[in-house]
Amino acid sequence: MGPVLASVRRLLLAALVVGCFVTVGAAPAQAACSCAEAATPLMARLKAADAVFTGTVTSVERLGSVPSAPGGVGAASRVFTQQVEAETVYKGRVDAPAQVVTTTPQVRPTCGLGRLVSGERYVFLVQAAGTAGAEGWSDDGCAGTRLATDAYVAQVEEVLGSGDPVTPPPPPPAAVLTDVDTDAPTSVGRAVAPGLALTLVGLLGLVLVLRLRSRRR
Image (cartoon, rainbow, N blue to C red; front, top):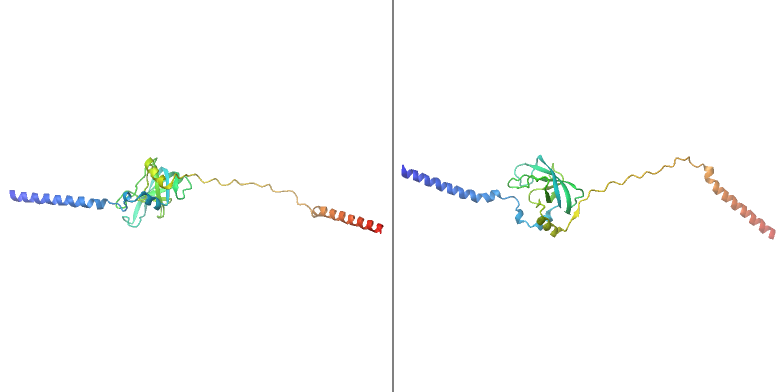
């Protein structure tokens, strides 16, 4: 029995070693995301973004399932909706401080951003949300949204400049009230009286001139 047990042990050990190699070799492929952010230059990510701005997350809500993007896992994916107080805009139309940014969970192979941290300040590189059930802006994990560290903000400003502050839209102009003339309308006689007086004066002057001419003759 001794040689048999030794052979069995050797076979089990060999199978374990082979299994480890297979697992290690397959891990990078399984762990790989559909985008490799580190391999994408910041310039390319900034160019691809519909909007780039800094802002602080004020609240986070997890929504139900929405249709996933092509290449995603399954027919639907849950999303997180972040209410963001935007501060500085570097690119795109961000015309009000209150913005909405949706993100997807950190699952393979899409590797979304997951739930952002309320109270933290981020540099948002986002796309206009075009997914059914979403609004505002979205980041699928590949756009380049990160915490707004001094180093990352400096990299963005090196490409896009110092940006502009996000200001709320101006209030609508105040209504101007105009006084309405409630006096009684002027009668026809009163309206034409000045004209008649001028006509009579003109006629009298003409008669006087004619008489003076007749006397001289």
